[in-house]
Figure (tube, rainbow, N blue to C red):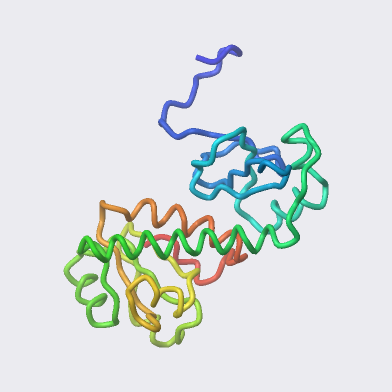
Length: 206
């Protein structure tokens, strides 16, 4: 029970308050920032940098509000320097992290790419997450369906998805259940918010 008598959430997920929206939500849906030695605001996508952190929801709107209303200074209770391309840097870091995670899943045998291999995994119910490039052909992508009770990721470009598989481009990919799939989905949700893909194909779940 909390001090006010309400039942405390015991799901085990750490929660933090967004300085832009004032809402409290699970930490993995937020971007952590720390203050660098010169007073600059530094994004900490991995959540591992030392120092006091402040959190902002992973959406372009929330980050824009935090910058425009100088909420970082309030959050850190200090004068800070906000880099001009802060939002773009956050996006770059999350893209890099997402590519790394998918690449690790591939190396451990938990991810495949290519239409036929993905189709085979889906048919055998080995796929938990369907990933398709945002700039791939809509007609081609429509031939594959999100796994039942699975997840759909569509916020990476063909070039970015290709990097995860050591190829120039990739349009279709799939992740097996377990392993790194949850972490990949969490990072993809953060990137989706930054790329303003609300709605889209509407296929976040099967």
